[in-house]
Length: 118
Image 1 (spheres, rainbow, N blue to C red):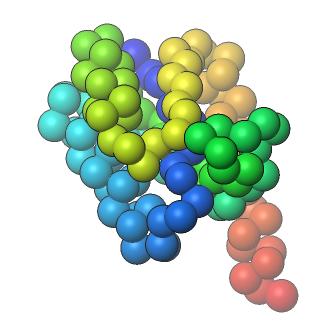
Image 2 (tube, one colour; image 1 turned 120 degrees about the vertical axis):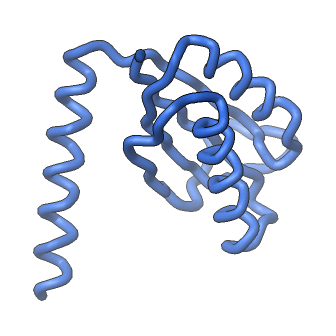
């Protein structure tokens, strides 16, 4: 099983409920293709570097998952077919990037814990 990370941008005209449904759809797609979602992050509404489809903002999401190499092609077809997705990028993670991602998750968890205590 290989590890992958996919960042995708959803159109900004969606409601919170619609964005959550879209993310759940892609997580379910990964699972049905034989993969396992390890981590999911919502980065929120962000300004784009350049307009895409005449839109200057988008909802950013990141999925970190494991699966066979066939997962990527099928998942990217699902991204292309969904009109809510403006852009996506999938990267195969090596051992160094896996270690960095784990370290980042621990650091983010510590920040959330400190913020919750305050």
